[in-house]
Amino acid sequence: MSPSRPPAPQATHEPLASWLRRCLDGEPIPPFTLPGGSAVPRGEGLLELVPESPATDAHACIFSVGIHGNETAPMELLDALLKRLAAGELRLGAPVLVLLGSPQATRQGTRFIETNLNRLFRRDLDRTGMEPERARELMAAVDAFFAHHADRSPLHYDLHTAIRGSRYPRFAVEPFSDSVRTTAEQWHWLAGAGIQAVLHQHCHSWTFSHYSKHYHGAQAFTLELGHALPFGHNDLAPLAPMASLLAALLTGQAPPREAPDRMRFFRVEHELIRHSEAFRLAFADDTPNFTEFAPGTLLAEDGERGETRVGDTPLSVVFPNAAVELGARAALLARSVPPPD
Ligand SMILES: O=C(O)CCC(=O)N[C@@H](CCC(=O)O)C(=O)O
Ligand SMILES: [Zn+2]
Image (tube, rainbow, N blue to C red):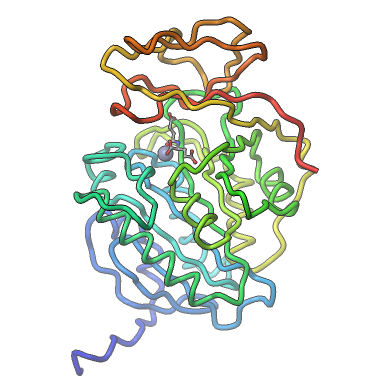
C-alpha cells in the first residue's frame, strides 16, 4: 500500500466496543466501519463518527469526557454508548466527534498533570507544557469538525463530575456569551436528561464548552454528572436519562423533553480567586455544591486582601476548592434566578 494513501476502513466494529480501553492502553485505533457509517481517528483520544445518511436536522455533536483525568463516570457513560453502537443497538444518524480529554492524566488517576486543562481553551494561548499542547490539539479537532459540518447546528456537551457532593448532583454550567443565546430546546433536553440545576456563568471562563460557544456559536455546556470517583465505583443508573439524550443525538432522533422549570437556575454573582498562600475558605472542605449562605456570613479570608462575606442577598457556593493554584478560581458564588423565558 502506498504510504500516502489512508488505510481502508476495517469491516469490524471491535475498536468501537473497546474505545476507552484502547485509548487508555495507548493502542492505535484504525479507521473502521460501524452501523450507519464509519469512524475516523483524528489523534490520541479523538474519534470522528461519520454517518452514511445523517438525519436532515441532526446536529454536529461533540461529546467530550476526561478533560479532568480523574472524572471517570462520563468516560464509562460514553464508552457504554459506543458499545451499544458497535453492537448494532443504535445506528449512527449524526456527525459526532468523541474526545477523551487527557488520557495521560486518566492513566495516572489525577485531575491534571501540570495545570488545569479546562482553563486553557483560548486561541491566544501562549503557554507551553503538557496541558497547553493538549488544549491546542483539542481546539484544532473542534475547529476542523465544526468547519467540516458548517451546514449543521453545532453542539458540544463537555461531561464532568464534581469533586464534592451537591444539593443538585447533576447540573449544567452554561458558559457566558454576549452573542449566543441558549435555545429553548436545550433547556427542554437537559431537563429531560435528568439535569437538576443550571448555573449561568457571568464572564468568559476559557473552559472547553466556552470555547465551542465563543468561537463556533455552539450550543454548549459543561455537564456535571455526579461525584468524581475511580473507575469501577460509579453508579451509572442515575445517568440513564443523560445516556438517552446522547443516544438520541447520535442517532439523529428527537431527544426526550421535560419542562425546564423542573430545574433550579442560578447565576454567578462573584468568582472567588485565591490570591495568596494564606487563602482559606471559612466553611468545611466537604460543603456540598449549592449550599446557601445567609447575608453577612464569612466565606473566605485571603491574607492582606481580607475577608469575603455574603452581601445583602443569600449566595450559594459552587466548586469550592481552597487548594487551587494562586490566581485561580477557588469558588463560584451564585444567586437563585428564575428559569429563562
Ligand atoms: O468540583 C469541582 O470543584 C470542579 C469540578 C469541575 O471540574 N468543574 C469544571 C466546571 C467548568 C465550567 O465552569 O464550565 C471546572 O472547574 O473546570
Ligand atoms: Zn471536571
